[in-house]
Image (cartoon, rainbow, N blue to C red; front, side, top):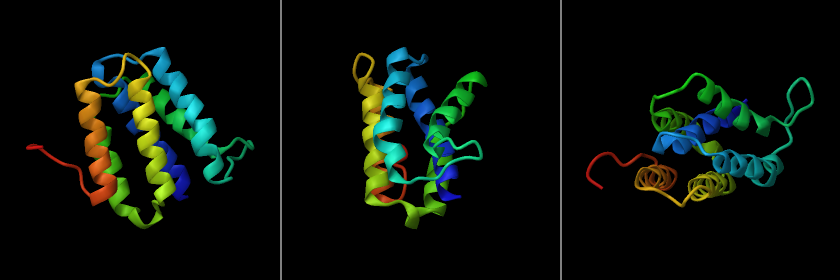
Length: 136
């Protein structure tokens, strides 16, 4: 159950990061799909009722957020999920989250200021257990 919820939260988080500049570039989606195959599928082998790897839930949740034109801060949602499930976050999962976030941000014209702030907050959360608020 942890991985299913994790993947849904990651899809929302990566959507939030991708949309930080007001639009989602094709390169950002392609980068996410590539990393799902390279980084997320190998972590564990759960499948849905149709036999598809559950890691694809990341892409599903990302697309769902895009369709509903989500505007809420999905970093806060991820922070709550992280705090509730902190013991399940292995070093590999944390590393994959930061690598995926960085790759998405770099995939289209490099990181902008907003993306950099989101990644910094995410990094702080994964290292220290909370998101930095105002006053960097």
